[in-house]
Length: 215
Image (cartoon, rainbow, N blue to C red):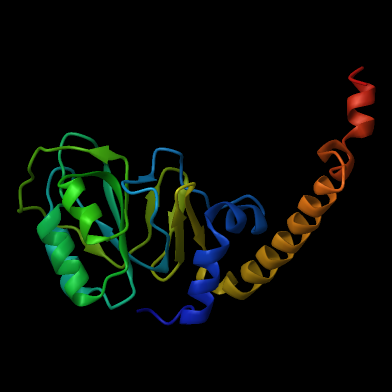
């Protein structure tokens, strides 16, 4: 595992969740809504081991599972190709054997039921039963882009049912602090709502509503 965050920090980020992390770092770093977990119950936090590979070819994924460190999250740019599933149950078993924490792939996977049964976190664009070749070169540990988010090796990936957020490796401490402060603020809001307050008052929206004639 790349030493960009300690295990306690990773646990904190995982528990805080992708949405809180995204908001707390200035509404940045969220991958697009098409990147979802195949099992909505999984939660994920770990440093990115990046993989740049060709569409419909998974040679670099077989290489990546040999090179990644325990705790790493494979972050794979498969170019958003939807007509092949370059990752399946065999690669999942291999990844779990070496301690890889999860997979984020800009593309599809297959063998979804088996992956879910194994409990391995996978975030992807969809499922495809179609196979892949094993011929094309690629790169590992280079910056990759998924949608409009640039991900560097070692950046922290936080994922859950809501989606994925990327924390730059140099901002882990500040993002955790901001996330905890946000959680405390929202807890106070929940308590105020239980006492009869309205969200429009808590968020300072009353004047805006009045200006729009919504009183």
